[in-house]
Each structure stands twice: as structure tokens, then as C-alpha cells.
Length: 436
Ligand SMILES: [Zn+2]
Image 1: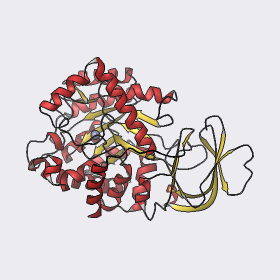
Image 2: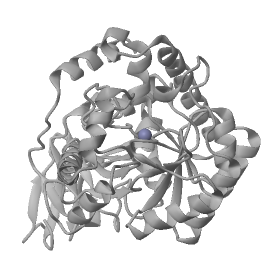
Image 3: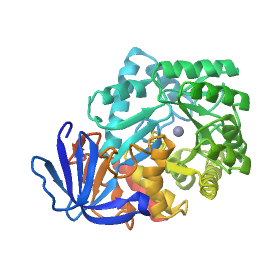
Image 4: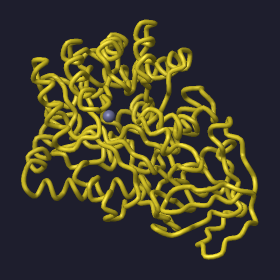
């Protein structure tokens, strides 16, 4: 649809900015991938390519605000260390490794797009592979053409921090952190990702999923440099103390999250910051039998803490009028590149925030968190014509997001989205979902 006029006709359009009201019988006109007009159905369509949405629901493309693009979500020991990890890392850093990485990232982007994610934020890669693939997508190349991908490149942390040895680079002094920020931006990073605390996979003690690894001085140095270069900072944080350091140190988005103190909330709000939930991997870690997850009981116990912290963080954010967005943390075990619909359902039911709040967080919330509220997140003239056709009303049955019937993004229309699902993982996760 690039450089052509199209119309998505006879839409039952969900207006996420009007409490998810369904606006029936409208035509959405677009030109060069941008919405030009929304009008009652039946107007003149001469010379336009028509995509008929009669009997279907039309929803804005989803914003997956937290993903890693190097994996499929199939459980493996790579993330949790050991011999398998060493072997994979050796491959990743070889010449062949970069080619493999680019293939994995491209495939992940295509899967995300086909699943209805039209804006995707990559938060931690190997060897800047997300940025290489992003540049191709922006030139209209490959199966993910049209996807609005923003990415951080490798995350940054202190030695021993979350991602050290895998998707993060390490620094010790504040000056070293500033230098790495500069390096990532020179390599094309759209934003900076830092890992302030540990994570579920690296915790060694019960009750400490978010052991603090970075000091406020280190965080401040990274944020100051990023902001000076015009970039936002996303921070992996999984404890209340970590959240405080993040908010006071200058971070823009709190990823995963934990209780926000008054002071932290005030600092985050003043900056126009956001919090991003990632229930998708945390819930299976906590709920599934350990024969499936291969996790020890310390990690299972800590997953429970992380889940509670995430919900608390989002509750605190809402109470203070702070934006809430969501992401899948794809590539973590049990988080696939086609599972954004699950995050929506988890957010609504497990978080207890309800379907409408979930639908908003998955679209406008994400757009606000990424600083793209004027460009994506809702269907309005002047924004990208990023949308999905759905069989059912998502405000009543959010599960319908699982199977988009058409995906439009950045001037491209995918009329028959193709999803490569791992049926084994899907059936395990479907079983879990029935318990909600
Ligand atoms: Zn992550």
C-alpha cells in the first residue's frame, strides 16, 4: 500500500482513547501508510484499494514495549548459565554467529508483526543485531517490512549484573557507563537499556529476585549521557530499592517493576516516565511444574515476588497518573514472539486491571512510554495506519487478538498473517490460562 490510497471499509473500530468504545460502520482512509480520514462508511472509494472489514472488529496495532529478539521462547538452559550457555556464546561471537543472530532477529520481527504487533521495542541484544535488522526494516527489506522497531542494542550493567555474559555489556565507574551509552548511541541505539537489579534467573537467595547491582551514581551517569544525546533510558528493575534508584537516577521506563515509593513516583511522573509490565514469562515460571521449567525452588519462589511486584508497580503508577505499558519479554523461556495477546489477558485477569485498561496499555500506553503517542497507539488521522482485523470484539473477548485476520503496518498490508507457533508451548500455556 506504499504510495497508494487505501481504505479499510465498514470497520467496527475500537477507540482506545474513548474507554474502548466500539465505533460501528466507519471507513478508515490512508495514504502512504498514514491515516488521512475516518468517516461513516459508504463514501466514494474510486481509485483506492479496499480492504473490507464488514462483520469484523478493527483494533490499533499492538505495542510490545519489552522484548528480546534473539530467541523463540522455547525453554533452554542458555539464559540460566552452565555449559550449554558457554557453547552458544562461543557461537554467537563467531562470524557465523552474527549471521545466525540476524536470521533469528529477522524471524522474530516477522512473527511479532504477523501476530499484530506493529510497534516493537527490543531491549537487549547480542552484537547490535537488533539495530542491523532494524536498519533493513526501515529500508523496507524483508518479511518484517512495515514494523516500527525501536531497539537499544546490548543492555548495560555492572559486573555480575543481569545479562552480564549474555545480552549486556558491563562497566564499573560512572564515566565508563557514560562511555558505553555513547558507544551504543554511535552504533545506532534508539534508546538505552540498563539492568539495575538482578533478575529471577540470576537470584541465588529466596526473597531476593532484585538484588541491587548498580549504584545511583552509575545510573545517573548513564541517564545523564543518554538524555544529553536525546535518548530515553529503560531499566530492568525487580525490587523496591531498585525502583527508587531508577526513578531518582533519571530512568524513563521501569521494566517489570516493584513498589513505587511516593518519592520515586513523583520523580518518574515529573519526567513523563512509564512502567512496563511483563507477566508473560513470570507467570509460567511461578505456576508451571518445575519438570517443565527446569527452575529450582529459589527461582520459583522469587518469581512469585516478581509477579506481586509487577502488579504493585502498575497499581502505584495508576494511583499517581503515571503511564502503564506492557511487553512480553519475548525470548525468555515460555515467552514466544507471537504471545503479546497473552500479556493483554494476563494484565487484565492476573493483574486485575480489566480488559479495557489492558487494551489501552497494549496500545496508547506503549506509545506514550516510547515517546510515540503522536504517531502510533490509536486510530486517528495523522497517525500510522497500524491496525488489525479481528473476528470478535476484543473489549469482550481479548483472546481474539491471538489470531489477527489482517495486519496493516507502516504502509504494508498483510492479508493472511502467518504464525509459526510451537504447539507444545502453546498447549502448556493454554492450560495455564484456563486457571485464571
Ligand atoms: Zn527483558
